[in-house]
Length: 516
Image (cartoon, rainbow, N blue to C red):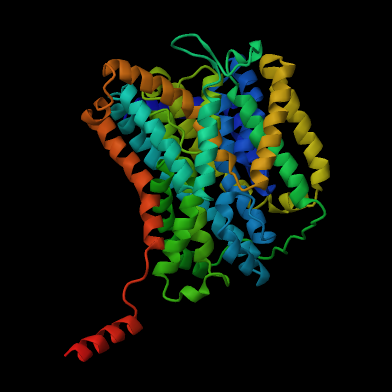
């Protein structure tokens, strides 16, 4: 690690403009986390035009710092509704509902929020330190990556998100396949032939990722949340003591430590992320607990472990994005798009070519998490009031920002209609149980998979076994086979008839006795 570049990163992030964007990002992130449904991916999609505008004024680093702050800030805010309303503001806060709301009913909402804030800060800090130390190492190994390695790694990322993530695996694979298909729209980069353009001049350059993301996440979520939350007022639980006692801190400390480690490692994996990390941390706490029956009834470890894990995972997911150029989840796909929009190519060369951006973003997380820790408790009262605002008031404001944002990217009315069309698609996907995440990630990685695969086939002179003979791509191919085979093996084992039952065994013994 270049220690001088690391120190220079603090000089970058402490510039007034960058500090302001960091503060704006984490505040928006907390607010979005508090408002159930919208999510950081949708928010970043809506704010991509603002990031583009900031980059046009020469503030590339500030734009990425703001979007990064939205992502990890949302993990803090999602806890508030989980504890007070029994509604997870973020998918990663689902398991916090179980014990967080139970504590709130016991009059310990403040304790739960205090432990969640402390655990979130520690988990994120541990993960940032890991990112600081491991990021340059991963980037140095990634310099050995060629087209075969990128093709295999991008395909592995799509498969992991589709098969390891939450929800129906078949539906996730279908969504990912549609995303890969959409990535082929436009002119072929090798032959310049038009593909699926239907003689439309607007589609010759392909479908803009920002338009797709703003439609699926932004407009789609607006439609879905209006229907789901209409006429369902929620009254937040009362908040008494905010700061946890020494006993609560002592009881939750091991859970915070375990959650931080679990979250860091699962966040690095494509398809892992904050949701899986929080679920794994909760399961781990139940397994090590002397009395697992306490969970679901107000166990403080059931809040501390998952909250530490989801914040650690949110931070460590920056490692594959910044060092290899592979987004690990839908939110990272938004940041990937933002980097491309502002003219920065994420990957192993980023540390050497743009150390100001790499270390500026990484070091902004240290400051951003301090800001979140300082603000998360005092702002709870304000966020509770925001929760009382009706969706019918918030939705038109969000829709207007979305429409103006997508128009300003290319000054194209066509993009607005495409965004609305994808908004309808996103709404229908949510209604029918299809998550848009795999589709968006596959759309982002689709062009990388195709171009890298075709370059690899030219390199191997048409021989596909070349993927296996190269060491790094060969190992990745083995992982791809394992990812494909694992669901099939699980399905076979479920359908396999049970082995000899006690009645079958006794009957077998009776038959043997009769033979004798």
